[in-house]
Length: 121
Image 1 (cartoon, one colour):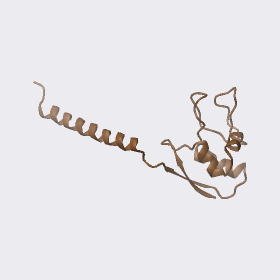
Image 2: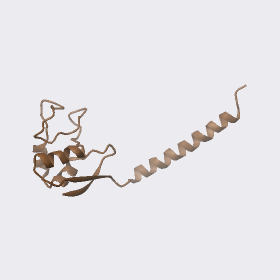
Image 3: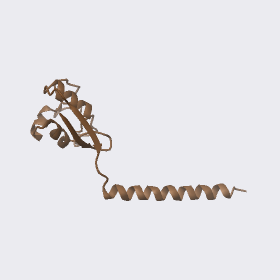
């Protein structure tokens, strides 16, 4: 089983990405997940799919690709598991932010040159 999925900038997988990799329904992924309505971050359980730590109950479940591969091999019995995580395509917002960052860096560089060329007296 070799599947490519998109991850968030931290390299974590969403429920949808896990669903695609495991070829299971969304409900099944939730049933496999190590969650507890009374605990925000329950202790590690080798028989379940363990999500990354969350800061709040409303945070979405996110999974590390290695944990998804471990779960697929050890619990579901899928022999060949290879998950390739690639960054999602850059959005228009990310392009604009990258351009703004470039402009700010250029402005900073010019300001630093100006300060260096006119020392305080």
